Image 1 (cartoon, helix red, strand yellow):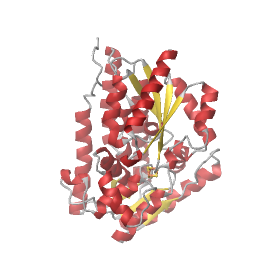
Image 2: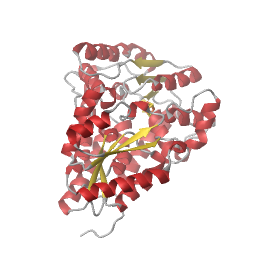
Image 3: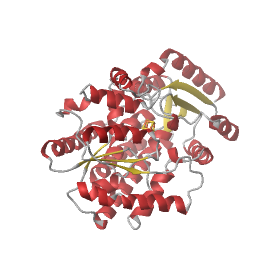
Length: 411
Ligand code: SF4
């Protein structure tokens, strides 16, 4: 019987640390010795293609999240602003470039002198246009190529012409990658990597789906930390191995009646980016309010289970165009409606992130339409993923506490 109110920590955290440390060690060795070429990739870019061609793959967005979670972003954003980047644009970008200009990185604690130097950069505009400007900054700085996969945004119907055009772009960048890589493209290796990515994504989906259980063995705040391997090691055995361990622990929790929030009375959905600099305090706050944030748009975004080794290019294009952030509101509403039902959601929190309009889904009336359709109440909070100056903590806590009291009074 659980009696405490504080959050219950996952034992897999130790394994996660080792998995992530090993990933950074591989990157550091490649950077220092040149034993492997380093490709920079966007978080929902063609990681499988790069891993299959022997690159070590580095993700600047993961670095941006590290800066946010370590509460360092505010130190670096003004430096990027002084170099011509607006404080209104993506604060992953401004904190990452600001840190680079100050020659600082949390990776220095892991033995890096600086972030690993890219031999090539590859981005997909499926998430936003900002990634192009971000990667082009580094391409100019290091004098290396940057390759683009251009995906249309706000896709309503996923037509064959869209999928075919994106699949063709995956193929068209291969000759450019081969000029830099030490390995030629090999379709069998690509199929293997796609299969591993598929398996990792399915495991990640199962991990997130354990939260359908009442009470949930995992919170959104846990998932935001434990999503590291699916972001940076998608397409490798390392991610598959890690999620087997995490899933087993969560299944064991369900079997033993252990919940992430000891006295779960309410279940919320979180839409939008995490407030990285408040991840831990938000986790504690919701737990103290007997509320579990059980599902989120953000963590669900790395479920690319359409990947299929039998048709690697078309299935890659399908998976990376089907992604929530790429879709028009009509499709997003369908996805959210389904998740609200499947996860037994009592209320929704929309985090309107000032510098990431693409991950803020309450700007064009979706929140009102969804409430009319589902009758599930919502709360909007204003903040930002990395720039803490955009977030009024006192005001938000009062709003969240009031929202939770209202939801409880209806139970
Ligand atoms: S999706 Fe948002 S947070 Fe991510 S890179 Fe684009 S603007 Fe930045």
